[in-house]
Image (cartoon, rainbow over all chains, first blue to last red; front, side, top):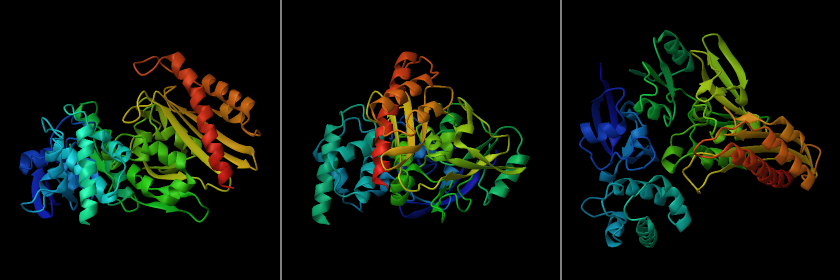
Length: 159
Length: 287
């Protein structure tokens, strides 16, 4: 089966890869490009562990084909921290102990960042609905929500 | 599997006509990719229509009607203020589907052509009087939303045909729509029952109405007798009772893990009543 050549942008850098037409963007990120931040939880768009943005839009990378990345801009959890500094969301997740096993964390960070770019001052309800597609089976969400609210407050002050 | 991304619908149709075996069209992929992964569908050819010009556009015609491109996502519909002002029920129905991530990809056309009886946007489309342009090797035809699904996972599209545009009628003055579904929690679930109501008022009197139900039959369906029960009324208690009874009478559901026949039949009436009240309030404010 012939492979497809794809040119794309990932976290601001141009990237090229060859993929099978059936391969998902998640497979490509993890297995071909070594970007293992996005996780495979369900593989069917239910858990959000593979969340990335595609042209700025939050999506499950397991529900995007690698071939669809041609000419698009992808952002993953690996691109969240500006340089050596952690992103406020990352810092607040550590401060609030908003994770246990950590499998859901990269997807939640990407999703929360997308929310705060769209709405810097969300209510707790808005955060909970926005993150409803990111499943965590460890912490029970409260610490996650608190970390996102706290990061949002800090980012508003810094802005 | 071959992956093709044609630059026009003509090319897409020509490619589909020449493709051997199983062909699927790809828009948001929130159903197709899941089905591929589960080996429910193994396409020999996957035709991605998102590079076709116009498929991402939301456009209002001079008569007030809307044309929605077949790759327009739920998130894009939600962000479109004027579309939401005209058709809040339809936009809210689409917005109920899946997570934020799914909203970033899912489309009205995909939800319709996946032909799930429980698809949230479909009763709202049927109530709104949405029509589709269906194009194939023989040319184009216009099909009402209620005539696309023919059973669970089945559509009336012929081999090689695809939906190329979604048309929402002009809203006009004094119109309002609403969609409600029952699920046992508040988010991320599949409708046990869904109901869309679209109506027009003059003063306080309903002059036109369409009521559609989801998850109570093999396809989402129009319930003309439920609409008749409120046309000519001011949505008084007697009209609401007649509406609920007609909505329940239009049900032919199954028992499954989500709900029983008895529960679904009852809830259809409850939702019809509540959705009609919302649509009625919206319509009166839009005069």
